[in-house]
Image 1 (spheres, rainbow, N blue to C red):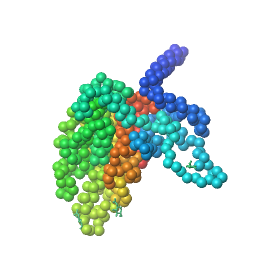
Image 2: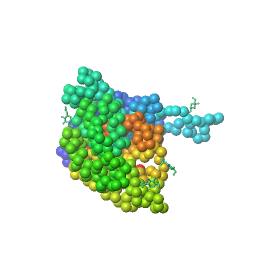
Image 3: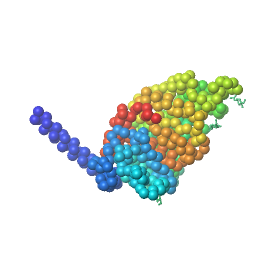
Length: 436
Ligand SMILES: *[C@@H]1O[C@H](CO)[C@@H](O)[C@H](O)[C@H]1NC(C)=O
Ligand SMILES: *[C@@H]1O[C@H](CO)[C@@H](O)[C@H](O)[C@H]1NC(C)=O
Ligand SMILES: *[C@@H]1O[C@H](CO)[C@@H](O)[C@H](O)[C@H]1NC(C)=O
Ligand SMILES: *[C@@H]1O[C@H](CO)[C@@H](O)[C@H](O)[C@H]1NC(C)=O
């Protein structure tokens, strides 16, 4: 007994020492700034907030992008866009004077254009500004190099690959199986790093390589659930529709050269299915029930049950194919579907397709990338009737993609431990469908 407790004391002291050392070196190198903020925040809570006895809560296994929150868009600079989750610190914060009841005498209460108080932005639970960190490091690396942008290769940056605490991104591969909405996000991401995305042809594949970070994004165009190319297919220049055929003819050839990263597989897989199936299911109905009273010939309708079964089976096949190819423990996420800029009853089936995706993701051990839902109804962020534009939406997308890559890479942020201790550390708590 005595021995054992002495042993545990020793272990405890040893662990604490290691932890302290780690905390110290980590905070020195990486987050002296944010710790500083944490102190400031602490003082602020003490003087201003009701429940001020503790530091802002450690976020453990919560995914901040899946918490209810506020999309902070800075009107003067989209590069300040951030998701601010509503935490206990927020909900228990002191009542602002303008919400007091009874109101002040002769009150005329109206609201001005205001932004979140920095105390909320600096909470450890508010996701990091990864795009800023990555961009700043990219700028430093490329400025020190005398090679023109087009000719840069990852090789040129080997000597600086660990600088700026961005070494974890070196060699990472992000695989997207999606549509033009994803492709635009990827293109805009590339442009932020001074790169161009390349495509062998429309609706096939796309590739973006950022040599300064040795970071690669691969896009496989996924045209929905159909198992063959029907006569009524509206896009005549597409040869193959079924993902099995696309896999063999255009996707598999990219696997070794581009998709498999340092672990022999992609570091994050984002897949989705929505707008192409929406269109295909409408077109199928119109081709067979045009001019009749049958609801199948209309676009303001729910999915019918056959369609639900059809899409669910096909998505199951896709998820199984991905797990079979990359392993069931590959970090993979279902990307929540975006609706149209002017969305009405015709988009009812988008939400239905989205729910199928969430269920299939959960079934196959994939998590949910909520980006599409975080920008829902923000039609001012669209470039046309279907696609979100470069700006707040794409910056948010980048911040999110990098945060999940960092999680998979296991960067170990003590402020949010164990969230960043590798994909598996919190995966069990996060594999549920999402609640939206
Ligand atoms: C908005 O600004 C006006 C003018 O400065 C001020 O009188 C008013 O109290 C402000 N509203 C709030 C909610 O602070
Ligand atoms: C870039 O990353 C890949 C792994 O994704 C790796 O095979 C390659 O060697 C890296 N390039 C350099 C120059 O280090
Ligand atoms: C359906 O009918 C309308 C009008 O009758 C026609 O304009 C449209 O091209 C038809 N669509 C299909 C898919 O046949
Ligand atoms: C929305 O609904 C109205 C009325 O049914 C229709 O005229 C309009 O085209 C719809 N808008 C879109 C974007 O589908």
